[in-house]
Amino acid sequence: MTGERTAAAPSDSAVPSGSAPLSDASAPSGWHLADALRERVAPPRFPDREFPVTRYGARGDGRTDCTEAIRRAVADCHAAGGGHVTVPRGTYATGAIHLLSNVDLHVEAGARLAFSRDPAAYLPVVLSRFQGVECYAYSPFIYAHGQENIAVTGAGTLDGRADETHWWPWSGQEEFGWRPGIPQQEDDWPALWRQAEYGVPVTERVYGAGHWFRPNFIEPYGCRNVLIEGVTIIRSPMWEIHPVLCSNVLVQDVVIDSPGPNNDGIDPESCRDVVIRRCTINAGDDCIAIKSGREADGRRVNVPSENILIEDCDLRHRYGAITLGSDLTGGVRNVFVRNCRIGGPGLYFGLYIKTNSVRGGFAENIHLDGITVSNLTKEFVTCDFFRGEGDSGDQTPVVRNIDIRNVTVGRARRALLARGYERSRIEGLRLTDCAFGELAEGDRLENVEGLVLDNVTRNGEPIAHEP
Image (cartoon, rainbow, N blue to C red; front, side, top):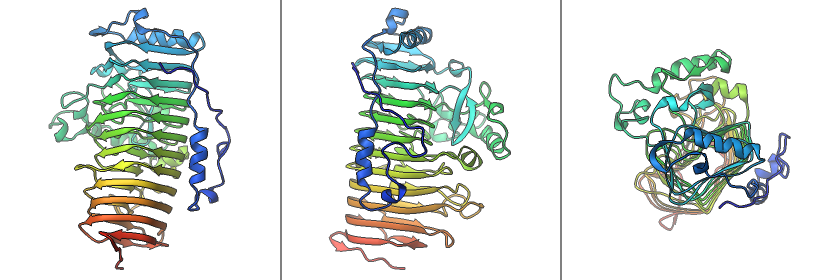
């Protein structure tokens, strides 16, 4: 049982209560901000009341549709002033679950929520973001909008039941079941992108029945005081945990094992004050991806992701272990990553910063310390402004103050791939006390200003960079 917890007091100011000025975060000693953040982000408190879903007619037989029973349990828990909606041992078939303030959805050990494969189970449409653009689309499997003090906890399993015949083919990737003639998200994406570019109101961007945007798994939208703890998430249609425009978010002791298409693990987007710790992630895309909206829509909303601590996590598969972007238009600042274990035969990058002159935005004050990497197929740090669209846009990306300390890498293609624009150089990239083992190639650096290497070695020898 989750038990009583003390709710954090969120701040309505532009800089959360307890935050230091940006100039402090830009200093190598900025780790004191991470410690303050760890103390500030507290889990919400829930009254010691239980609302078992079985009391409302839910049956753990794997066949009975429990959607309405869970809905009524959530509504009663909320109306009573809050508590725990408990899911006991068994398999419970359900559609979308919408949380309300002061409700903890507690999935007990031995319990499984098995989510419907029928898209109609995720209607009516709700406000969401698809690839960084706001729209009304299929409900995420577990969703909350504008709520306070909410949680998904327990030692149970959340099973999205996506596979090569359900949800994943909409990705348009043959590896995941798509074949010519099967609908896919690219049938809809150009229309949504144009709507955002031309400023069509979000209420008119509706992509429900007859459209093909896959829903995310857990998505609190515009919420305060969010806890996701202990659960195992498998077989997601798309991203697993996607808080948007939230503050005071704590994700801990979660296991994610979902190697499907675009199956990012944890994606805080335009969020403030986030702690992610003791999570194990085996994802089909980036393990942890910090985002802030995309292109015209990112500039319209204009809310960065800031004050994010990631610690004691195991990040194993597939693209970036820690990624900033590529939906980075609103900016990312003050990210702290420490004491994480990274690597595996299918993991590409350690720190992956994705932006260019189409996306724009900024990434600044990024701190890594105490990272152990077994093996990567590509670079430990990659930031390439020429990736994807190259220099074809009218935005100027800004990447600065990347401080990396106490990193050990067993094997990778390179230590660094950093390519800025001549008009916008990557600034302040510092590596201290870092040891790289086997590197297949030398670093690739273009338009990098203020690179500092202090006790950085390759197989015990100091790394020397060629222009």
